[in-house]
Length: 337
Image 1: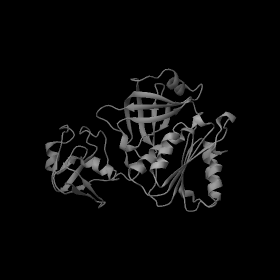
Image 2: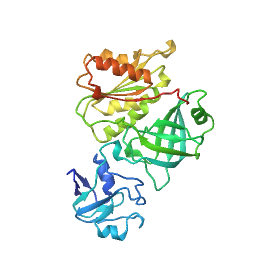
Image 3: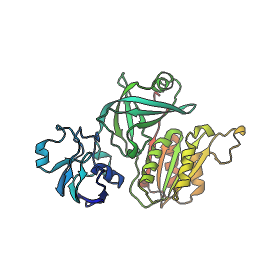
Image 4: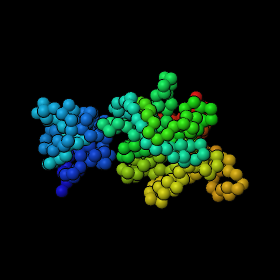
């Protein structure tokens, strides 16, 4: 048995099973409702039940009071439908709709993906989750007052841990610490989410252009798109110097096998003779130019070093890409490390 839920004022509809929370079912259906902790403690997901009945689930009385219930309010992160429902809640439509939080976190685990790339997974307190749009980033808040920004590599559907890909900048204060001293169970402080690098709703084919760890936010975007069976054509050009620098090619190749609307094109700028590299070579944005004479019908999402991003925007627009169809996130690896 499933129940039908109508969201007002948007009129969007989704189905929910009796054992599913309203928030979980809405997110799985592709509708972003606001949330914070996802366990009934913070009240960020509170909305109104206009018609129908719910099981309120387990929650803290401070987050949903008896008076709240009398007003028809519920916490959608723990409420479950017991009939068809009409609910009232403002959906998250853009980055401005998501609150920026400052939170403590614990380093859950670390894994070297390449000689100079470290993946770290962060765990938030049990009563907190970080809502974000795929492609956004967070800041580490350092003890000296400085910040270091890194894109989230996990999709919002897999948010029990926050995944980051950190490139080592030799001599860089923070990345030297990550590669030399950081360990599991270390406590850090973060702030986020930030940024406007996220997938827009469109039927246009999307070209993703990644340089090095610019793959991280694109990984988040693509996994989210695949989860929701987004039908638009997507192609990823991922550029690096040598094969080990393409540190998750197995994952990208797996996507290509599983998704009919996705292609993966790795590009190396400095392959060595012993690599016997059979693929594309040169600058990654040039590989895109070689494959496309006219960009007027595309959207482009570029992430990596500022010179690559700037060159891509200049050259793609010269071939017809509308300025409002180019979205980017420039990584300045040398700004303090």
